[in-house]
Length: 231
Image (cartoon, rainbow, N blue to C red; front, side):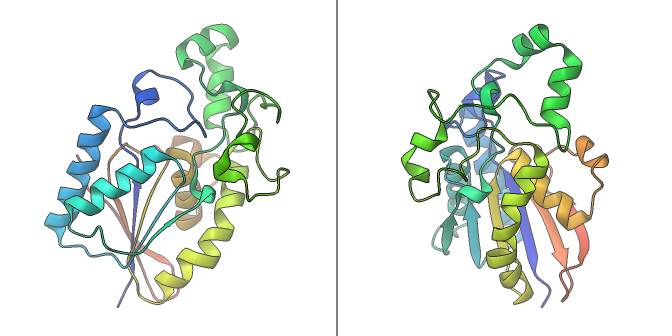
């Protein structure tokens, strides 16, 4: 039996709505985001798709999205794993800043590079700065040197891949269906790997909030098809 993987970006968050850089800040879903997540779950229920395993980040906007999706599709009981490796990319010192105001200060081109380039880092956040993830109990069991002060998509992919290789790929190879509820950039990183997207072309890949993306694989984990469950 061929395995299926569903990727879903969390529903709209409060900081998506406020047009702020979010990253590792633990922001909640907006009312629209809750409705997007529930609607995605209904689409999955209507499709008849069943999952064996669920994965998400340690940030509540992704966790809640996963739970709404599974509840609406009557699959809240399936095994679930949370990991920091599926977190959104860390936006460094940009976190909490308004994107429009930041563009006015640094220029549209610079902000576009920070947001979309594959290997350019944002301004980094010092480990002792307010809001540093080093002080967050979610990451207390990590070597402080591993906790980032800022990431680009390349670094995000590098920290996502060990989890893919150790946890997700073996399940898919065993014919198990997997759902991952995570974030725009951690999912873009996975999509880059799965679809073999070039460093340049990945800049143009968008992940819509609350839209399930379904991948079908063959027995060697080559992608057969990609389908979006549109809103």
